[in-house]
Structures are given as structure tokens and as C-alpha cells.
Amino acid sequence: MTEIGIGICLLSCAAAALSMGYATSKAVDAVARQPEASGKITTMLLLGLALTESAAIYGFVTALIMMFTR
Image 1: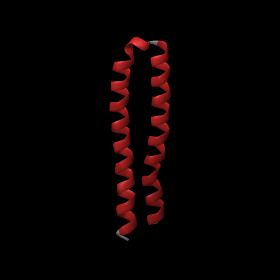
Image 2: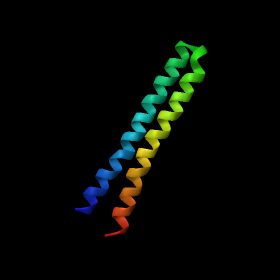
Image 3: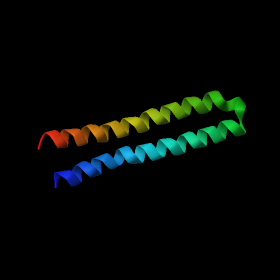
Image 4: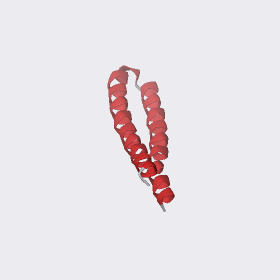
């Protein structure tokens, strides 16, 4: 049963990777359309990527805790 819980925790890592790729592609598209707004777009992209990465790290750490406290 613990293995299922670990797998569910690691789903956040996969979801974060997909969402970061999607956000990056949209940011590149936005910069291609409006190059003069690249500074604002980059700032918002980095903020969003940092928050998304923190969610992935929380899921990974939770999975490690579950794995080593059995």
C-alpha cells in the first residue's frame, strides 16, 4: 500500500514537468509575438516556474519520507 502512496506523491513531479514545459513554450511564443515585453514575460515565467518546482519538490520529499519510514 505504501508503494501506491509513493507513486501518487511522485505524480506531482510528472505534472510539474509537463506544466513547466507548457509554460515555457507559451512564454517563448509570447516573446516571439511581442519582443518588447520580454522582460515582464521572463519575470512572470521565472516566478511561475519557481512555484511549480516547489510543488514538485514537496511531492518528491514526501515520497522519500514515505519510502524510508516504512
